[in-house]
Image 1 (cartoon, rainbow, N blue to C red):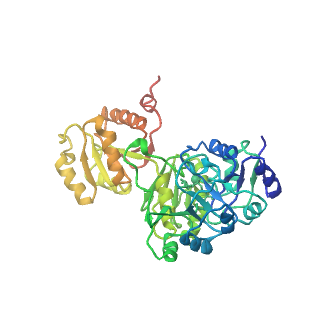
Image 2 (cartoon, rainbow, N blue to C red):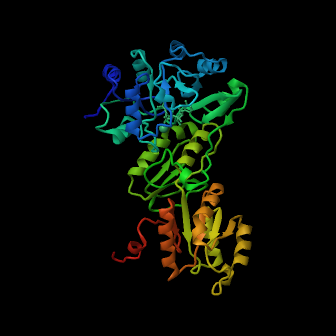
Image 3 (spheres, rainbow, N blue to C red):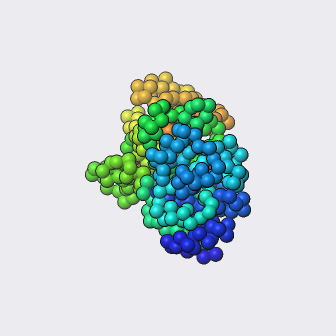
Length: 447
Ligand code: TXA
Ligand code: MG
């Protein structure tokens, strides 16, 4: 199937009426749209995205009146929000309608609705006799698209039409709000800030979903993620030659081939507009991983922070010690903003480098504000790391450096990779190296 990219609304109307899937522009991100009243059409969206059936879709309508036409009783709080923010990047959880295909709400007690503000999609909705179920137009878990070209990269030859509305203005998904037992809930921070909504409702919003790293590896869902490992949360991302670097605003006097800033003037609005496009660009650069500076989590920043936190790869660093003086070692930990050190050496003392014995090590780390844990049992390591990663973004494993321990370090990396961790080695001379080959290949052996 050929994928056309055009502004042909009439063609989109005909395709959607025939239960086909069409990509549509919105002010937030591009959506993968289908007739929300047709189970077959909705099924196609789930299949294309490889999205679990348990993850519900947002229903896109022209305006508040279209909700009334579906026979839904809209509560007063929702009416107030609609009148102020629709059409716009706000999704509301409302009572269900019999007319909408049951797959759309995935068995949940509410249906999510929003009226997108993009003129092309508004025109499309005016010509349709049904609303559109539309998730973001990316395969499940991947970075959302903010241009027609991003969509084409994901779904070329899989959908008949992408309506090209240019780059999305807001650039980040809609805010999702609902009510449970008399309390207002923020299900997803988005392009309208929490503060804006709280002002209208006159009440604080409660947060439902958590942005913290889940408790067990199996629970971990990486979302909004580029293909490459992404490490978020640096006060100052280290200047690594093999990384794409993302800063909030242009850093002064820095020279690097793959340096990006989300906003020239440091505004969060501009940062939201450019974030996903920047992640798409980083994925295409000849680098191995992506390092992203921490975003302040107030106002629009809450949504940016949330997405980057979810895009963050579950990663650990390894570091050796016998080549280092204590000062060099500490400088490396600082450079990589390490929050916790897990010591996996079998002995709590070091005969050859006494300053790396457990006592002095623990004391110095404590003074440097770095948490310390001794875990000499390999079997318990993944659990210890998972727990440490709930609290600290950057966790390092301390091994003894030098042969044959170096070999041990690579073997350990293989094991951790199998457990789903991305492993980065902090080299003795500084610099990060991504572990991506089995030990025999890393050491230049033939298999
Ligand atoms: O800005 C947006 O909202 C974009 C554009 C295309 O409109 N759409 C979007 O859809 O981000 P999607 O599917 O990528 O994310 C929708 C989120 C999901 O996390 C889903 O769990 C939640 O909305 N959601 C949808 N219906 C829900 C419901 N009935 N109850 C609770 N959460 C719901
Ligand atoms: Mg999405």
